Image (cartoon, rainbow, N blue to C red):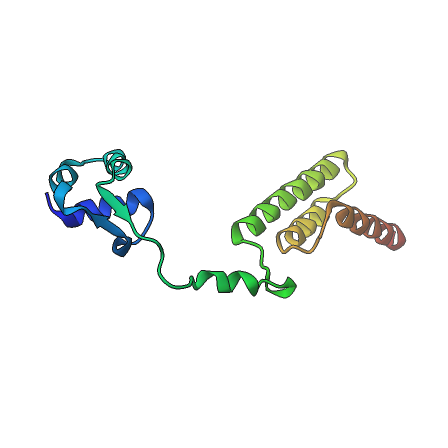
Amino acid sequence: MNIKQKKSLAMKAFKIGKDRIVFLQSRLNEIKEAITKQDIRDLKKEGAIIIKNVKGRRKNTKGKNKRSVGNIRKKVNKRKKEYVIMTRKLRRYVAEQKKQGTLSREDSLDIRKKIRNKFFKSKAHLKTYMQNLNKLIKIKK
């Protein structure tokens, strides 16, 4: 077996770079026989594999300090989940109102389009919009 492959296996097992891994020359035969990540971990416990410390200062600590109020962004997946939860809630409410007869078909379609375009911030916002809509309809009659 190739030592490079064993080094890459050790990289995956310990989640570190290849330059930090050192194999003892006297125990290379044991290292060559290692097949799994667990074998590599056992060899490290025995002392056949040595892991060096990180050299220099880490650059990734610099980014943590720059996180001020304006630089924090929500993750895309979280925004999507919030959108999905809100749209389902609002659509369910609109369907319920339509079933009761308080909303006409045209109004419900219009409201559904607005839900899709994130017009409503919350269910309460939707309710106030529907109340104003009902007032307008009564005035027109």
